[in-house]
Length: 261
Image (cartoon, rainbow, N blue to C red; front, side, top):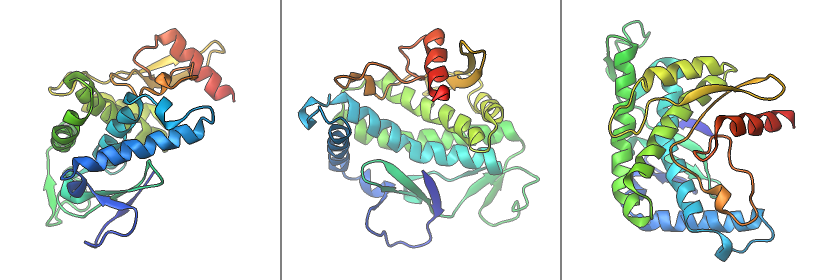
């Protein structure tokens, strides 16, 4: 996944504005169908009819929420800024069925008192990192509320599952932000700052943790509250390492095997 600054109102082929798709629930139906087709192609023994409805539904839930969640997390971690994450400021490109690029339109951003751009007309200065973390939560939650009002009625997920997915992308996004520069620990520290406790309507504090595999190697990971339902595909036996159905010992085993490849 990559990011780019969007300065034009014209969307080229493959790009979608968040505010545009949130006005068209049918977009998400088509997106789920495209994912089901791709999953059937990746698993040669499956047809589209074999793909459980909840699997592409879970993918769309997580991938769309990652647009505001990962964008906000990356800028919080790397620049100590939080951009306005309203649907009118974000766009994305699918390739072919997953989010390949996210576009951010310049505008209001929150920053710390020592930010070099603190005097920029779009800057809103907050007193400290705790206040900036609160802004990140608020921005992600506000966009998520717009999305879930549209997407929630089209899928068979309860409210907790929907909001657990929001919590997951924020927690995971901060961990991945640290990992993108080879410092999982820094990402974990930010996850535990932003999700220091259970903030409604999010479903938990940060679940980041370190597990040790049988070779003594430590891995930073987390336990998700929502699920992609990849395991529900016929023939798929091993769950994801962050699966909510997996205990710490199994999580360590899966991560150990992945890093041994």
